Amino acid sequence: MAGKVFFSVSMSLDGFIAPESLGALMGQQWMELQQWVFPQRFFRENLKLGEGGEEGRDNDILRETFERTGASVMGKRMFDAGEQMWPEEAPFHTPVFVVTHEEREPWERPGGTTFHFVNDGIETALDQARVAAGDGDVRIAGGGETILEYVNAGLIDEFSIALSPVLFGSGIRLFEGVDAGRVALEPVRAEPSPKVTHLTYVVRER
Image (cartoon, rainbow, N blue to C red):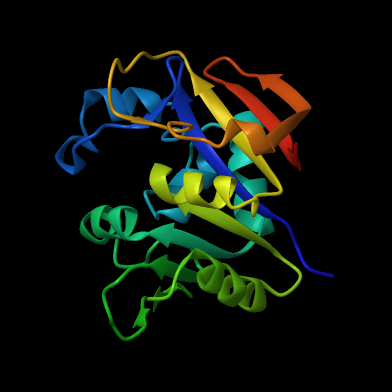
């Protein structure tokens, strides 16, 4: 049985998921947006940052998201940023399919992550990710433009947002340019934690 296609992101209260500039990705605003992630035990273990860390619902959600993901898809912008920032053992530990115009041989990293570069569109990348994921789910990892392409193409089954108590003012909006006339949302759950509010929705065709 095929798994679901989903995305899971942190978002500011005014609707942004990243700064406009790649150079600001590790800046103060982005760090504040992701502040709920960094102390968690699962995050620290996955990136080999040492033992210890917080446990609780935030930590459980990070672990559950990782465990359900059989393969990931991302855009070239996210890959370019991550290639500079990820450790040698990239944190996915699954096949990752990069939607790009660049032709490149698969890039295998220690720990089970292999990046495959797909040159003929989002649907081909998703088809390849579904095969690689088997019964697992496919996560559209980002960035915002790639997520939006999948939403507008009707290819997302559900998504989760970690709504952070921070304002960006500008940057990359998650739903900028969404085809709202064809997308309907069904709330699944809302889970507040001391740091963020986790919102999950099923996507239906309107």
